[in-house]
Length: 425
Image 1 (cartoon, rainbow, N blue to C red):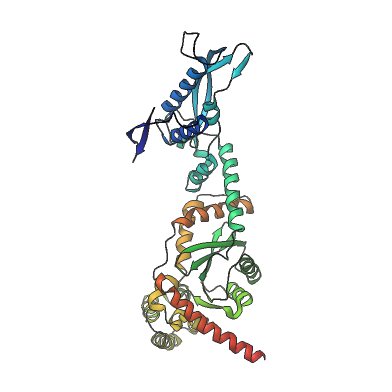
Image 2 (cartoon, rainbow, N blue to C red; image 1 turned 90 degrees about the vertical axis):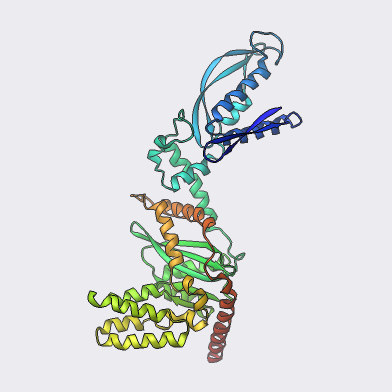
């Protein structure tokens, strides 16, 4: 019979009674105890000591007796050592046992099990990722006061191993199992480089990290190669795809090169508005910001386009360069309006905010790094952070209207492809 303890809340311990362990095979029973003990921090040290003492008793019998235990096994002094609990390395003193007739040490299976950091790479990886500097790890050891932590070099090596696995998993992830209806593309700065990230929105509204590419600028050649790589990994365009971008010309050309008439482009309305306002005197920006915002908030395509054309006439009296900026990609800022889904999906897909929010979460994990040494380091950190964030991403607002978006895309893009085919013939 073994008394079982369960932790509840923050450090609260509850005795949940007795559990019969005698019928469980010894190996399975030891694994169950190891798993249980590693969850019992900070009472784990006492539990480990009890397990080691019980093991010594089984091997050498009770103290000051010559009966019980393994024949010829005797206690042989104490030894200082260390064990791992979760990802904490802790000092411990344990009783040695020796087989006198054979003149050899008898190993303690429990002690050997706790010599191996069980899932420590994953635990350390998560702690380093959310802001725990490798150099501060010893000061941040949290399990019990006796913890003396790990060396910075050990933490770094284990984080490299864990993050390299994450990078490989993201780069090799198959995309054909996701029914992607919208693709959001934007970049995040890492020192002198840009990481262009692709975020997919599935037909049921889930957000999926599709991949990223490292580039100095969002140029057509690099972005086109990145998009082709997504297609090779299974990204499907045939059902119709909406691509949301901030207006970078290289990225726009890459979409046209790779996707052609299989995708519709929604230009970020926020970026367009701010680009236009940048040409105006500061005293006029607030007024035109309100007008542009009101125009884009019109629920239907004719009203929104008419309101923008009126603003265009006003801008001609102020700054022709602002008019040129508004004209560039004018229709692509109204794609959701033209498809008839702005009312339901405008909040989520009229801008690149879904990816901007993701970049903010990335910043919490990566902005603390003040020196990026290699490309591999940047990519490992980014992949690890993306996969750590992905499970907590929520479905987009208005996701129930995504099937309607798919139908509208098929109607528009199907007509465009038929027209292109007729002209070619």
